[in-house]
Image (cartoon, rainbow, N blue to C red; front, side, top):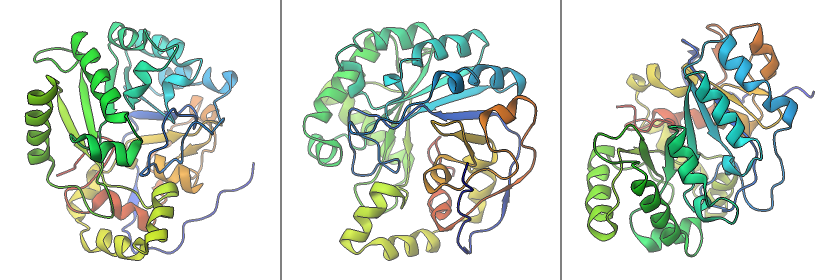
Length: 315
């Protein structure tokens, strides 16, 4: 295996890992969408997919490290042929499973029973819906995506997802349209509730506001528009040290489709591998401990303004 490139010099503060609680696994880059903000550069043209032998390591690692959460992402993780068996096995261990769902996957041919499967296993659904207005969503994610996303949310609601008092958690994810920080999460969540409830009868538990990372497809669009350096400067200027203790890389390890380990999903896309341990199989016998986290200028995207992580705003 080739060594991953080292981070370039950055003024981002040094970080060390805290308690390891979450394994985030990218099952592959194949997706039924090709969103303009995607830092993974996923899409229908991608064929990368985790092999069965690597997939088989995930549940033993969850057990060996006594992890509480398995966070599944992609691409569209549901397109992996081993997705449902993996979910069943992790849930049988009592591990929380998060499905990072693009919503339109629920209406793809062959996925008709997916929503009911997720509900039956008690999977937490974290669903991308970058705006509550059709034109904005279709511009960012493709024509017709908003209508299909609403249909997916309505199907999840009928199964109990997002309903008051329901254990079936449904969270939505907001991404800005361009090189700007997300607005305050609390106010934006109120707007989502008002518009989605009024116009579509949709309910959900939480809105997670995420900053766009200057990586892969979004970085390419920033360079094409001449906004790359300006956006990085904005992230640095808006850095808040108070967000540092809560950034996701302090409690999460990211796994790519080949089983290689990273501090986070963003470092994965940059090829900045975890220090010390290199492959999923290494976690069977070793804990990552309080090792240093590899940081770079993109990390300001997690600490700028109210902060941003896989769990939304940090403050």
